[in-house]
Picture 1 (cartoon, rainbow, N blue to C red):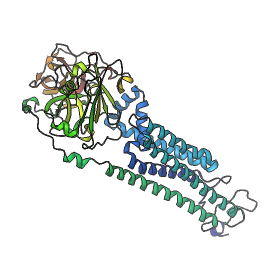
Picture 2: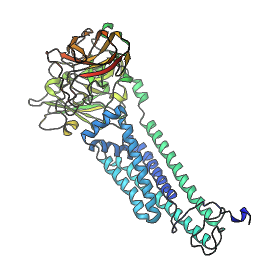
Picture 3: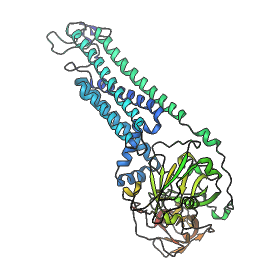
Picture 4: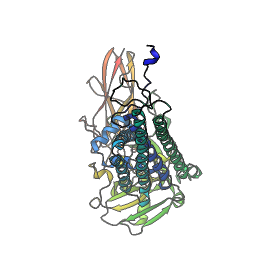
Amino acid sequence: MSNDATRVPPRSWPRRGGLPRAGAAAATGWAAAAAALGAGELAAAFTGPDSAPVIAVGSAAIDLTPTSLKEYAIRTFGTHDKSVLLGGIYLTMALLAALAGLLAARHPAPGAGVFAAFGLLGTRAALSRPTSGPADAAPALAAGLTGTAALLLLARALRTAETTAAPAAAHGDAPSGRPEGGTEAEPVAPGGPGSTSRRAALAATGATIAVGALAGVGGRTLSDRRHDIGAARAAVRIPPAARPLPPLPAAVHPKVSGLSPFVTPNADFYRVDTALTLPRIDPRRWALRVRGRVDHPLLITFDDLLREPLEELDHTLSCVSNEVGGPYAGTTRWLGVSLPALLRRAGVHPGADQLVGRSQDGMTIGTPLESVLDGRRALLAVAMNGEALPVAHGFPCRSVVPGFYGYTSATKWLVNLDVTTFAAYDPYWVQRGWDRTGTVRTASRIEVPAPFARVPAGDITVAGTAWATHRGIAAVEVRFDGGPWQEALLAPDTGPDLWRQWTHTWTGAVPGAHRIEVRATDTTGAVQTETRAAPYPAGAAGWHSTVVTVT
């Protein structure tokens, strides 16, 4: 007998008990998910990017995530934490979509229920945002309905193909690769009726994925165009300060390779917030409301704000999530309107002790009112480093109050200022257990040499940065291998609201591994504590150290 007589055609549609192959069934779930996401993105183009189902669910997840897990995400992933969150949501959706496809192959209703549940979850998440309205539910509802319908149709097409294929194989329409009397249904021959139905089912699945992807990309592109504020921001002309500050002296930044610039470029300024999509606010439609316990509530447009006398502020802002020696601090020259002057114009009631800023995306940040009014230069900032605020840093307006971490002083995308009391209202982060006032702790870090650097023996330059915002830095000391503290050379002092950079020459460093530590003293005489504390709930504490190898 020749080899051709015994060859069995390849199985192009393996089956068991009349059910589709698992991969094909899972693919119907993925196709339905693509259709759902595409529909959601298209709808969100008209209701706003933050109402897109994945963004709405992600934002709700951020609000519900325990503080310890949030801190772990920031510590582990840094400013990429939002990308990791969204990636996790998409991965979870892919797994659930595959499960829905497998369920629908046998029992359509439970499979469709997965997508219905996703739609309901997205709807609830969208409506849970403080600034949401009924229209914000539309993208999630569209996604749920589209995904459910797509899955039911694709699963039915797949079952129809299987139903067509099974009788064809049983009645000999396909060549048999088993001896007579075999009990298993054979594969369908290419070109047979079952094969045609199968190809149609797979084509429908692939087409649904393609259409869903196109709809998603098209919806996102349309949303970006509809809500783009690039031209409006570029058209803003910020007036100069009424009394410009002098340029910072060059000596504030020691010329040491590897040391951070004294003024942080806007593109490098840290960003830590909860916004998965940046609020895009057209300054022509923006207004700030000052309300609450005031005699004269105010409504101020952006043009009104620019007509006010503008002030400049050189200021080092830091994040409470910054670990000891961490990167979440930056210095900039802000330009804006005096916040104390605005509050005095409104007429603050006696007994009010908290100023709550509310962002366009619903974030609330509370600042001690007495600190805003105690003479420090607090601003409603409209520019940083000589240009209109970048969108990522609060365009068109944000608050800046020296002496506090950003979570109690720096409301980005500011739309409301509520004068109230601490007893009456807990802002977002206070509700999650963070310290109510958020006073910046004294911090110092070693930047040169870099951690685990290999440096030649002899005299070695050690350099870094220290800050104690609104108190100022009086001294910085370093020590090596637990030895005596040695005073570092401080760059010129340009004010209590700015960090100070420092250098020290380590003389006669000998080969081997060495540990370098740093501590700072603020202008009140308080020495930075050695005791380590995590960022939660009031900011990190402890001495920064690094290990280097001298060769």
